Every structure is written in structure tokens, then in C-alpha cells.
Length: 262
Image (cartoon, rainbow, N blue to C red; front, side, top):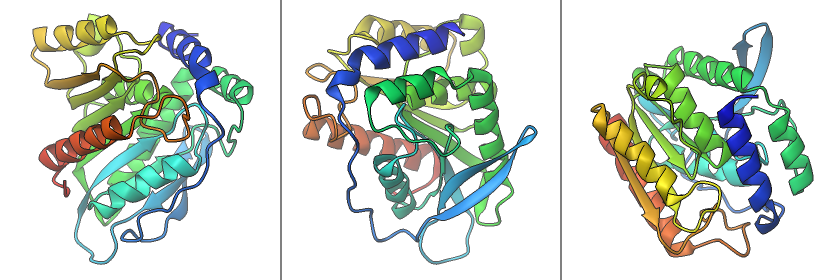
């Protein structure tokens, strides 16, 4: 198990008690209905949900949406639908092969059971799939993730130099300078100042190292927020105002870097 995986699993397990079973919210009706798609990842065939902007046949920027340790649940699907409503082809990946957790113990088991190399392979396969789509501009592909998915988004940026923009919402950052040097995407991060797993010191060190080697990065720490503050299913830690600000930040970031609508 890699250091990244160990840190991510320890962090999410310690904070799981604050997260309740995900519940559905209404998806943005502006985007077209999602389509279940499949594509190869190594010797396997994997599935994802593809959300496309409603109407038109022009080439769009695209965003790979990476779920939390719960799996591809309703809340993550809503985030993908929201991105599609802002002009992106959004591909919500399923790193768990159809499994979704409804309790912290199951989520812990699923996250621990996901080999990091397979997860990165699946994400690279998702990028290849998007690049082949007629309505996607292959030169404008980014990624976004939350919690475990935020960590994967950053490590995906290390593994794929073709990504243009990556958003990590309270995802554990890589720390190896050699890995950071491989990042070519612009990076935006949203973190909680009260997060016990990813501390402000961790975030500041990551940002400082990125700036030291000339990599574009923008991180914000919300001083009164803890981990998973953007998910309303976190009944004790959800912060609506911070969430709205974080969403505005990444929508403007993607608009600037990829060309969607803020």
C-alpha cells in the first residue's frame, strides 16, 4: 500500500463518523440525462456515467469526476450534472466497479480494497475515452475529486501530463518533489482549517513546493471548516457558505483554464 493510500484511508476512516448515508438531491435539469458508458481499462471493461451539456454538437471541454470513499452515489452524480449544466462533458467514474457504501465500515473496506495503480489506470482510461468523443475537445480535459477522490485527482495530475486543470477538494496532496515536478495541470485546492487528517501545514507545504518549482496552484483554507464540509450529508460538518464559495472557485477556475461557464 502506498503512502498516499495509507494517509487517505487513515484520514477518511478517522472522520467517517461525521458522514451519514448519502441521500439524493435534485440534479440540475439543464444538463442532458446521463448515459451509462463503458470503455477498456487494461484487460478490464469499466463503466461510468457520461453527462453532456444539453443541445448543440460543438466540441466542449470535459471534466473527469472522481467520487469520495462512498463510491459513485447520488451526491457525486449531482456534481457531475452541475458541471454539465455549465458546459462541460462530465464523466463520473466508478472506481469501485458498481459498489456503493451506505455506512463507514463498508466505505473503509472499499477504499482499502482499491489498488492505487488500478485507480490511476482507470482514470487514464477515462481521459482516453473522453478524448475519443466527438463532442469533446481533447485539449481541454480536467478532473475534480472530493476526499479520497481529491487525492486521486492530484495523483492523476502526476500520472497524466495532458490534463489541463485539476481540482482537489480536501484531497491528500502528494509530497514527493519528483512527483510534483511531473504535474503540468493548473491546480486548485479547497481545504478545511479544522481538518484533522489534512492539516493547514500539509496544505501550505504542498502549495509552497508547487510554487517553488513554478507550478500554477491556488489553494484556499476555510478556517472554520473540517473535512468533507462540501457534502450536505455530513450533518455535523457541512458548511453551506463555504461550500458555495468553494463551488464558485472551481467553476471560475475551470472556466478560465478549460473554457466552460462560471
